[in-house]
Image 1: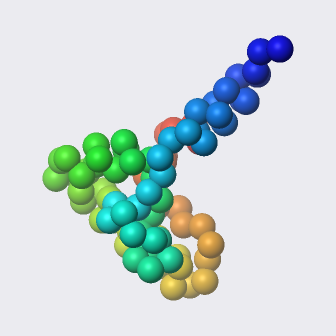
Image 2: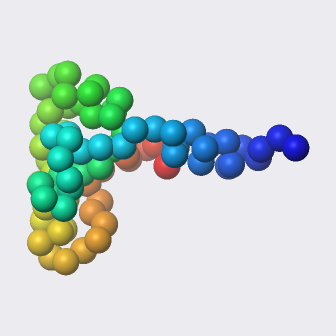
Length: 80
């Protein structure tokens, strides 16, 4: 029996390598988690690096306030 579209998308999502920009634990650095491919694309341009830095600032601010999730905007416009 073939998988439904939502099941295929979840399967693809779980195969992605998710990490932080530094490769260290987010609990230690306060950085955002994102797919490695997306982080590499962002690091390759100055605009991307500034977007990543802004997302990390928002993540750290939310964590300092005791929030589990931060609306940092890296995944905006993407179906996740």
